[in-house]
Amino acid sequence: MSADTQITDLAVNDHACLTFGEPEELFDLTAAYVRDGLASGLKVLWLSDSPPDQSLAQLARRGIEVSAAVTAGQMAAVACADYLLRGGAFTAGQAANWLHDQMAASRDDGYQGLRLAVDMSWALRPISGVEQLPDFEESVAAMLASGTVSMLCQYDRERFDPVTLASVAALHTRSVAAATYYQDAVLRICRQYAPAGIRLAGEIDYRAEEPLSLALAEALRMDGTITINMADLSFIDACCLRMIVTAARSLPTPRSIVLECSPAIASRFVLFGATDVTGLSVRTIDDR
Amino acid sequence: MTGDLSGRPQAGPQAGPQAGSQARDLPAGGDERLLEQAFDADSMYQLRSSVAAHAAHAGLSRTRAEDLVIAVHELAANVVRHGGGRGRVLLWRHQHAIRCQIDDEGDGETGDRPADHGAADHGAGHDGAAGPGAPPWRITPGHGLWLVGQLADQVSVAAGPAGRATTTITFSLAAGGGERSPA
Image 1 (spheres, each protein chain N blue to C red):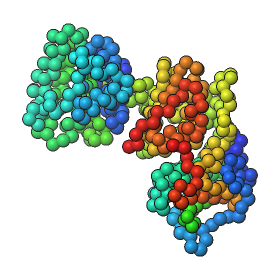
Image 2 (image 1 turned 135 degrees about the vertical axis):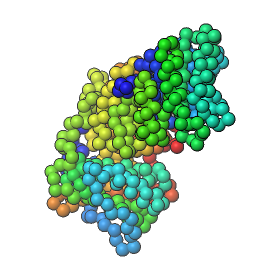
Image 3 (image 1 turned 135 degrees about the horizontal axis):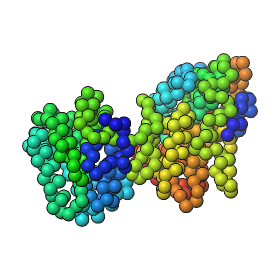
Image 4 (image 1 turned 120 degrees about the vertical axis):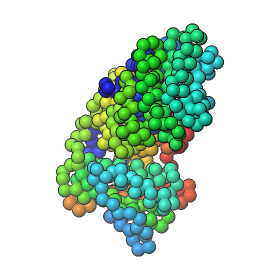
């Protein structure tokens, strides 16, 4: 088991174990996985825990051209319960058959490969046969070993117990998580993959100056537009406001930076002169 | 970005209305004491949580409560970083307003960081490193204290014991009273 791999570095036949801490992180990493799959001409299928239309909307919000891909039949989002489970029960054999059928169907449709993302949150509910999950993961490993099908199993690390996580992670070729600059009980600073940038969640103040500085510096080295996602940030102090606006001011002219935040935090950025900075835009998102 | 934040606030935060050498403004008879809490570098989060809870309970709107929280944070952070390193916050209701006093109670010369605050300017770009032709910061320097002046309805600074500063901020409870941060 190697250390965490970046979501953008998966091979065509990886069986990867993604751990995520919050819905924003799950949607971000899935969006990057879907985006890269569509761009490579692969068929993409997401078995999500939320209703499929909501899952697709989350991908679209991150700039993925889902409606075109869905119309063309290249992409689909379906509810886990409808596919992996039959009559509310899980059996490893049936799930493996289902996967086999999907692989065959994508080949028949002329795709060079298949990318599957499977949210495993269903396994947290009282479902009969859930103890067969490791068997299924093991058979997946065998089925993907040669070929051009990759599967991203998505585990909520806050909800699955560490023992389960460790045992299923060992059955995967890689472990994937968002690159994290800082994490403690009240703050998380990590990379965002779709759209590219960084994400701040919780409360941030001058004590996080160092990791924020590092995260901003790395973000500035990325190509294109940078997004700083602060959707789940509830507090930011003057020191960090200033650092972000200063970083934005240092971007050369054709590049741009988007700050996504709540109305309350947006008003702080406005106070700090964000609207006067060329290439900097503040996108207000609904309060949660 | 070194000057004001590290300076002893004898002169007071310059942007603050009514900055001056007013006497200490402790709760008087009839005032309702809401919170007294010590803080240091490791308890800023707890301080913000307490102030937020009491501000909401005392009737400040959500927006004004958030303004009070950041104002208290900036003043406390100033004590931690550039003052004695630890202090005390006293929050009370005075007539139709919430008042908050932040005392520097430290005995150290500086808090958890050197007063020159140099680390702040690494990596993300020094103020002066934005490239030639970039306009200067419109707020210079001491953004934290500047922000307090922008948000509070009233700010007063007095010299406390041993030359340590005591800052009192007032947030009006009157509907529509006081400056509101732009939405």
